[in-house]
Length: 256
Ligand code: NAD
Image 1 (cartoon, helix red, strand yellow):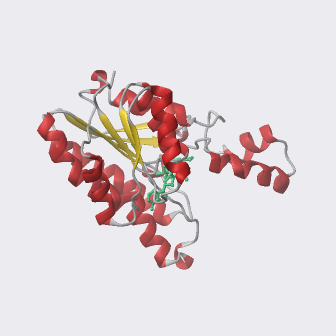
Image 2: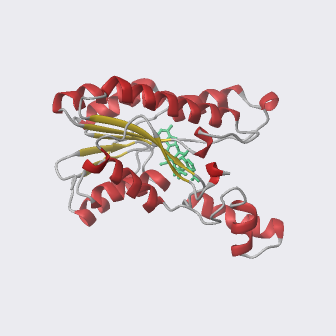
């Protein structure tokens, strides 16, 4: 059980981050939910998780594209035993047409934010002699696709940064690993299914298996609950000596 631990999950008001927050709360951790918005529904989401799992759940707004806000998130949380760097965005374009501001935003949110949050969290973890840093990378942290230059660069970068974090914390009761999901069924992906069905004139099952999961040998999406379960495992005592590595949750994508 993770009772008494505080987990901060960046970019957690939807998708994988939300699934990770829910599974950590189910395991007993107090959770800090985050995104860049500061709406009533964001705070209501935290209240719902707190009530559902009987833990303390707070929403703290902070924009992960801004270094000072990344640092302020961890400072405002006041404790950080588990840090899950999850916030991420995507943009798809050829290198010679890739907008420079999109490149900068992807590198800032998907990679540099983890430097800032980790820098503030590590002294807190060292003071307790226990900590977990889990970086949500991607199959694109290990392999590439065309037109995803910034995303692939950022995700390879976070895999490397995870290894450095592991080396700097080795033997201190702290571990750092990167989780590499393949295609995960998030609301964002779910929303693309009707369009793809129309475009290809296929039914739901066919478009999922033949078009969307073409590179995922299992032809099944990973779920946000499964990603959450992977993070909970990395926070368990069984994972005390798992550090500086990657765990793929990709239905065989990177085995191809
Ligand atoms: P999502 O869009 O549902 O979630 C992204 C989260 O990040 C949201 O909560 C969003 O509000 C937040 N966010 C975006 N910009 C932010 C900012 N500037 N500051 C703070 N929060 C911000 O997408 P997702 O699929 O759940 O993605 C989560 C992570 O998983 C990302 O790092 C993504 O690259 C990675 N990933 C996703 C998949 C997939 O198939 N969905 C596969 C591999 C990796």
